[in-house]
Picture 1 (cartoon, helix red, strand yellow):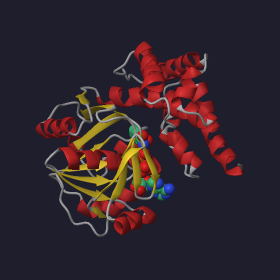
Picture 2 (cartoon, rainbow, N blue to C red; picture 1 turned 90 degrees about the vertical axis):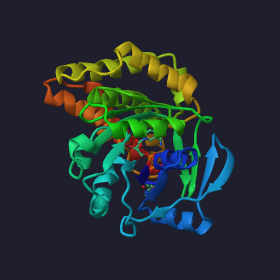
Picture 3 (cartoon, rainbow, N blue to C red; picture 1 turned 30 degrees about the horizontal axis):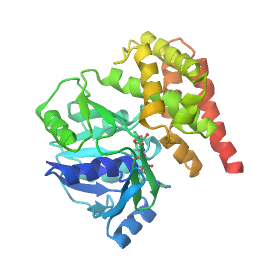
Length: 316
Ligand code: NAD
């Protein structure tokens, strides 16, 4: 199989490099952040650490959209939500009818944009419960020991296809621990609700996931956000793949045991002066509520809260 990763940031590098190292797939990368591209070319690859250890240089095939002329079977798309539209436009000349697109970005908004270039039966979504940090240009840290993290994947049509089975087999070999789901929206929403608790609160209070869950009231705060999001989903006719109680346990387990030392990606963005994806996470839940005559007061408030935190961070 041939994969081309659009967005050689933290997660794009994790998926692409694990596929390159553990399967016989051919992997290319496309990126547009000039300092990153220049650094990777200058040093002859990407420095990859595993949980801050074993830092080693791994060569990758990296192109800008304008330089690239490959024809992959599968596009793996890992941009931040705010960057995606522009990046897809720059790659549009490369998209062909026989190709499929896979994306496990956080939030909701990317599939609508991807669907402008790929028919729905060629779009596959994913949710990745894993932590990865781009330390800076050309330098990435795959948090967790080998085999850490899990993911779900599902066709936008909910039907399992041969290409999905082939991607699943490669992801399995690459230690990404995939599980195939049969409910696209229910799968995506479960991760959005998870992020609306952990990413958001850790970002606003500038704390790690372990510090968050060590607060005695953390489970109550999480349950309030989960209940509000599930109420909005119920009114919108969306059934999530986790129950409310399972969602709470997932927040607790991943924060306390999975990645207690990790600052979620929204915090990393804020601390580097970048915009966060909150409008696509809590903001999306709030919008879903509004569209279904239900006001998600806490998600509305936290969407502002994170934007205010972005602003406040600039004053420090
Ligand atoms: P990322 O910010 O590391 O990379 C995304 C793109 O931004 C890449 O093209 C990268 O080159 C570029 N970029 C990185 N730093 C930049 C800077 N300072 N200025 C300009 N461009 C820059 O994003 P990611 O963490 O790989 O996330 C991709 C998607 O996956 C997001 O939707 C995210 O929420 C989701 N996700 C991330 C993680 C994680 O642990 N990082 C886990 C699960 C899901």
